[in-house]
Image 1: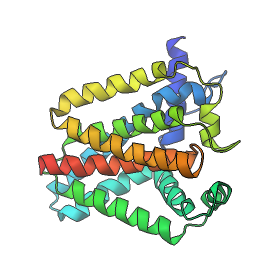
Image 2: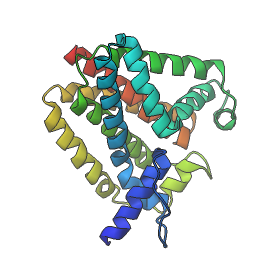
Image 3: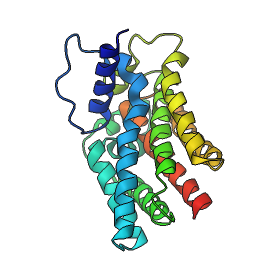
Length: 251
């Protein structure tokens, strides 16, 4: 595999998970399956932006909660609210009477009361956690941003697709049976950021893994597998859990 091909895969992952301009991909365009290894890399610009904006808000003297919400707003703009939409749809779908009905609800573009409550709780908890940090804590924010997208990749590969179409199916098609090889770049990146964060990173990663596992188990039990919404929910829930623990160990 040539470096140019790998770069195209990174650009495709960025196109899917962020709103950063990536230009036009050269032919042949890689598939989402081939580019999924780069999902964790998409956390780098998001985590960096959150850290810089949080630092600027603190320097300007914004109240802690306001600073946290501003940092989250920038992250939401960078991702196009993709993961927030996934969480809302996933939680709304859990109210369905069976798997088929749950998937129908999740595909509905309208948001229900469960989804609204889930978003309010996620954003409120994350903003409070960010606002309580004594500084920008850039290494910790990068850890949370990268590891939450690695968690999304693991859920994608460990659960079967629940639909015959959609992002979850697209990213899962023609997967190599040795999926662990695809996890190595993201795992290596998480390890590097963990070393930069220090021993406190262990608790952060444990909380994130637990949150992602809960989402995955619920998706398996109630839907039969993963969808794009499940992946978004896993990312955002693990991110929220990571920020909460990060604020506990640094605050």
